[in-house]
Image 1 (cartoon, rainbow, N blue to C red):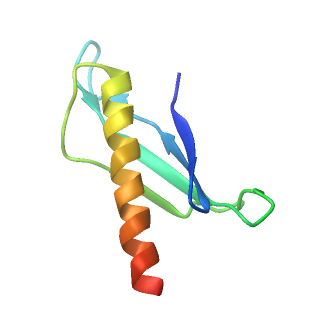
Image 2: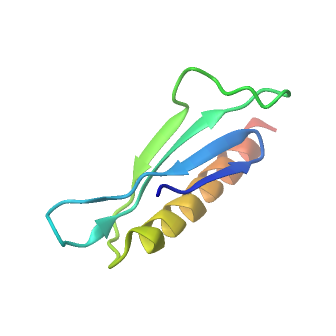
Length: 80
């Protein structure tokens, strides 16, 4: 199961994957902006594949979600 979380005005989805069968998991996430009524944008706002691997999908997704939150925090500060 993929991890999803709403954070600030975005929906973050962990989409980690394996490069080979029974291999390590590569953390990846996508995020979409939400409006004030929590309606999602039809367009992908940001996607990142992170350069670390994990033994489980859930650990990789958790790492990806944390990375996405940091990206949102950094980019929201630049706009203010």
